[in-house]
Image 1 (tube, rainbow, N blue to C red):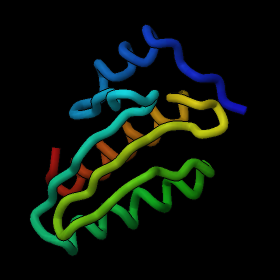
Image 2: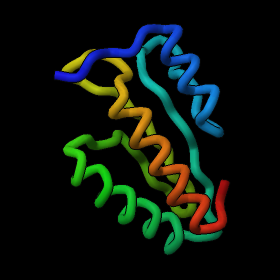
Image 3: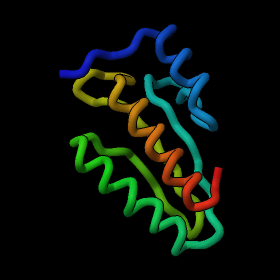
Image 4: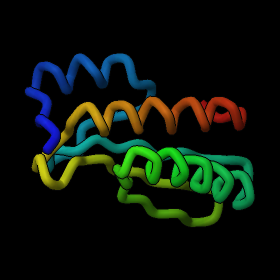
Length: 101
């Protein structure tokens, strides 16, 4: 089981994650990615899904056309863990490679 990050550790990790914020009323982090079109958004989701599956850590997400809303939390830890931070970093890197910050 993963260890939940303290509030201080979570805030420190978020400081290094462009665009990610804490979810109000829940111990989770979130980001909305906006791509040029549906194809690019779906490509981002496909690449992110491969990373998530490799680490056995899966996001909550929603896709409408060119927008992908992501929420990360580790359910068995009831909050944000290092797994969430690592997946957020990977998602940011994938989006950057696609030309989206």
